[in-house]
Amino acid sequence: MSLISLLAREVRHHWINAILGTLGLAIAVALLVTVQMTTAAAERETRRVMRDLGFNLRIIPRSTDMDHFWTHGFSDQTMSEQTVRTLADQHGVFLSFNHLTPTLEGRIEAGGRPALLTGVGETLVGPGEAKQPMGFRLKPGQVFLGSAIAGRLKAKRGEGIQLGGREFKIERVLAESGTDDEVRIYGALSDVQRLLGAPGRINEIKAVDCLCLTADQDPLGKLRAVLEQTLPEARVLQLRTLADARAKQRQMATRYAQFAVPIVLLAGAAWLALLAWLNVRERRVEIGLWRALGHSTSRIAVLFLGKAMALGLVGAVAGFVLGTGIALRAGPELFQVTAKSLRGDPTLLLWALVLTPSFAALATLLPTLRAIAQDPSEVLRAD
Amino acid sequence: MIVCENLQRSFRGPAGEINALAGVSLSIGRGEFVVIKGPSGCGKSTLLLTLGGMQRPASGRLRFDDCDLYEIPASRRNRIRATKIGFVFQLFHLIPYLTVRENILAGLPPNEAAAQPLARVDELIDLLGLRPRAGLRPGTLSVGERQRTALARALVKQPALILADEPTGNLDPHNAAEVFRFLGAYQREGGTVVVVTHGQDAAPYATQTLHMAEGRLGPPQPGPPRAQSNAPTPPFSNNS
Figure 1 (tube, rainbow over the protein chains, first blue to last red):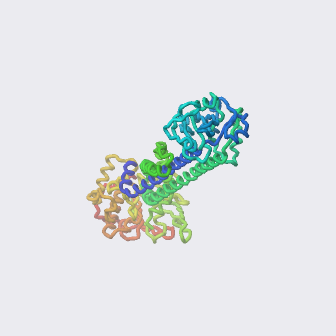
Figure 2 (figure 1 turned 30 degrees about the vertical axis):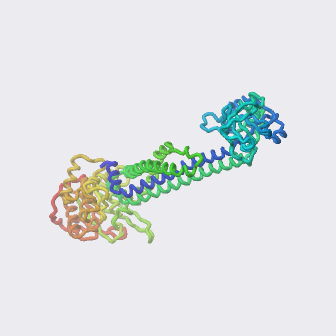
Figure 3 (figure 1 turned 90 degrees about the horizontal axis):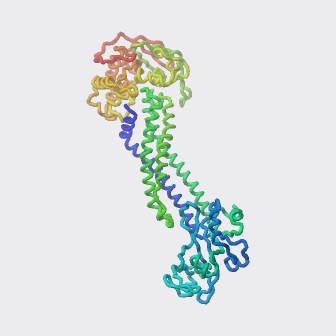
């Protein structure tokens, strides 16, 4: 009788056992798939939420009068708009800096009172990255108004506004922020360059620190060293509290993933091993009998491993479907910012198809070999 | 056919070391019907499994035909067990997920499925009165039917030697007599039988009876003149 025929008959006869075994495997795989998907989603969510805290690095001309900078909030010196491209083109820059956004900032009068005017250029992200650029994206002729300015001018979204003798469309009125954004007008970089009489110039590159080091790990020293080599005419300032909070949160998310996934993996592995051990233990007499009938150790092992692998394959597919379903169902509630990014991961199915049967076979192999090596007199003899 | 010299084997039990085989020597010729008797735990089953190449002795030698059974590679020992030795157990040890017919087929050497062995399976099914049960699983059989199935499984490969461990221990007198009738018929055809039993049913068939106590065998006692059996004479020609 062929091994496949024996295997099929055994599975059919012990169908409850086979279903429970498959269910155990499927639940273990589902748990792993769910945890893996939700952990990845949690990391993504953390990155996005932290990113939404805003830029935490300010790159300004080295010759900036820092007293002016701190009292006015922007540099009195400018640099070429091309500087941002020069910086982005340097090898390895995006390992330390990302979301490089050229800006030009100055003061103007709006409604007879001073206001801040900020021009925002195109944001550059690392090559090949699918990241959504941070910051505002404004087309020429559009402006965003801070809420205090909008209130002062009694301006509303969709209306026009005169700045420097030109008409601009109010694309958005910003919500109250409790910062100097209340009196800020954002416009396209080219428009602001014209309004401030500085065509082709910027006075700051806003960026995000990619090192994600906490304050005690001296991120600023490292960033300054990188900038020293790539853009010596500039200096970098770090919004330390923001950067530190971001780094801590992201490090926590990474540490949690590194903790949770192996724990679930170990728990799943222990579960599978227990199921395999129980199955082999239940069939010790059968193993002794096959030996008595002259079957080789390898043939007996294949009989048990074949079953484990077959159940492993079914459990992998069922577990992947179940785990993905749970993650997709629970995900939008858990991860509201990045809910749309949550989707089934085919690579997890591939891993499940390879690892589940392999592990099920491995978990079965040890108790099977042990049972085969066991003294047959313990299970076969009458006295 | 079998020559054992000073077989030794001990186990660690709850009450300490148990000498299951304490220097067992014996000789069994082809065509013999050997009955081994003795109290529970005296080492009878261990001796039987050792004779069948299932349990390596701690020391001593065991010659089966022309080879030292525990000196040859495991693969060759498996082959000898698969082709020349049939086991019958007190608890039958049928494979629960196979039908009667498939259980008997399982007694054939692995991968052997020629037409002749398949015909022999059907012959044994008829001979042992299992035809109406051939498609059923062991769970639905009476104990007598289970043991007849186990007997057929042992006989299907036409072994040179049958080792039976309390084969009638769970059977009523009628079924017990049936089992020994078949074993006796097999022996008359030239097969060799070694039976461990408590009962007297095997006595009429025994060519020698051995008593075992605390891992040792007493002197062999010759059996009675060959009893006449009413059993049908099955085609039990064996792989000698």
